[in-house]
Figure 1 (tube, rainbow, N blue to C red):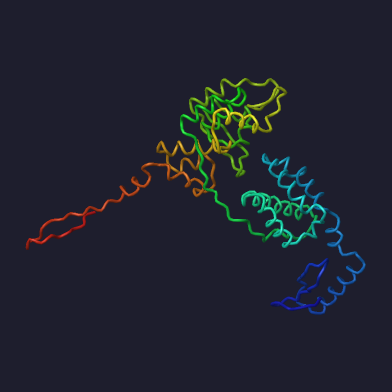
Figure 2 (figure 1 turned 45 degrees about the vertical axis):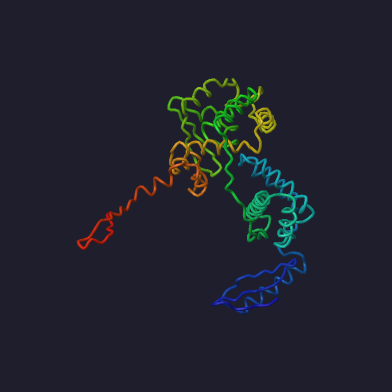
Length: 346
């Protein structure tokens, strides 16, 4: 413990529960010494407010609070958080929030990486970081040990899409409740969560637009409805007591279509394919039909063009069209002395 000066201000430096604390006091060295003595007394008596605050919440308790008070009410993808927290709790459940150190989190990264992909570990780290962010916001702790933890590098360039013959085969293999859901994905590029949470008030068949008010990027997006998609939506029966486009007999939306989708893939004999790849199929076929990447970006709702560039190689003429815009013509002819001479014309 001690006091030190930095610039025009005096600081106190001490350790609490094994963690280093620094406080800016002001221009007075005498006041800094007084405050430091006060901190020593508070810690000795167990009255230091931060100690009391940090001791009172277990990781498991904060995880439950995060899921119930934030994730479920605010996120369509709360199921992903629930799975992440299940794995995080297996490692951290016996600790208080303040006891978890950056080294503990690094050890978690190493252990999880032995079992799952870098992308999965990164999703779990993102959940952990945000859980600490909310804990600080809710006054449960002052600092986050996860704030400077780096994620693994991951390759996000996987583009798996279906050929037209496979699209037809998959659609025919779908159960009746799944067919319109898959058809919407093929014709709109909407995410699974966006489709399963779609409500009739967000569908305007008169002007042929679907409004997605709460997308993954928390931005409103409008998806055009083509002729085929309009016919599909018109054929979907409306539940008298439910606003959801796709729902069960009791009016509640489908929580998942994983089982029925996997069954359809087996019947269609399509391997190595996920529901999210229907979105890739939508984008890939647009690019192969000459639609520009900027337009595809807007339809998919990507924040940056870098997410959309992965489809560029599918355009047969995208490079040729680019170089044709800039043509340098080389004319070769004889000069007055009968020698070959090249000239450049633009």
